[in-house]
Length: 77
Image (cartoon, rainbow, N blue to C red; front, side):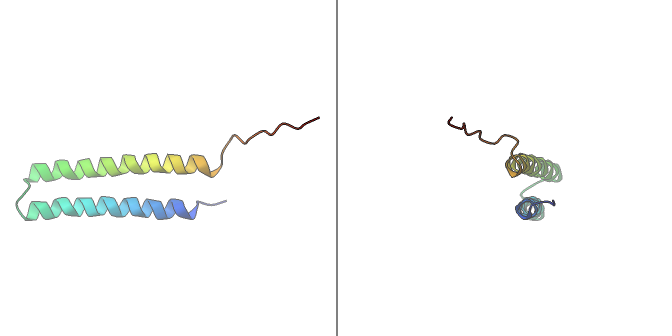
């Protein structure tokens, strides 16, 4: 029993989103729209935000993977 494929694919999407947002902050720094301190704050903000969104998504997905409770159908006697 391994890791589900959709978990790996979704994790890659979140990783790419974090990389894209970090690259955006670097581009804004190079164009002069951000100071060095603001860029650092933005990178930290993006990293923490995407990490917590991934954690929420991962918990939701993995809780649905093997549910602990199954429906109990009463038998008629």
